[in-house]
Amino acid sequence: MADIISSRFASPRLKARPSETEPEGEELRYDLIELLFFAYRDFVGEADSVLAEYGFWRAHHRVLHFVHRNPGIRVAELLGILQITKQSLGRVLKELVDKGYIEQRTGAEDRRQRLLYATEAGHALAYKLSSLQDARISAALAELGPEAAETARIFLTSLVNADERASVARLTRRPSGPTE
Image (cartoon, rainbow, N blue to C red; front, side, top):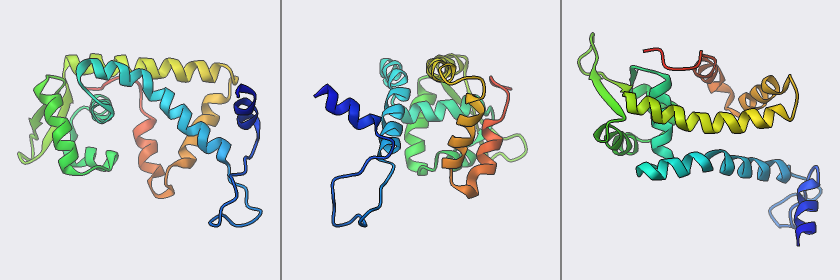
């Protein structure tokens, strides 16, 4: 069985089982599609284990990450980044606020704004989770050579919808650490 599995993943472009919905002769990049699934599973897996210790899930991680990296972010901005409903964000945000990982402040110029900040505990947890993921990324890049980080950045950026790439680039091309 191991030989079947390893040879399956070694193929550069895999053919799926014949299907009435797939055009004849068209080969999809199932190997890359599946590798992306497995890479994501393992990339978030260690962080998921830590989050579970706190009673949190991936949604909590995403919210905490972007609040940590964007001190004073408005709820509306966070909704745009995460592309989730206000109701979904509200539930997760309430838990993070109630447990002392995020605090909400009223905007100085517009009192209707809710600005979000990671607390000291929030910064510590966000850093712990990011450190796990950074270690995995660093190990993978070390296997590929000096240009690997830039190549990976280009590849991942190319997977983002074209109309969102500029805003994603602004979010991701910032110095490390909070700037509060």
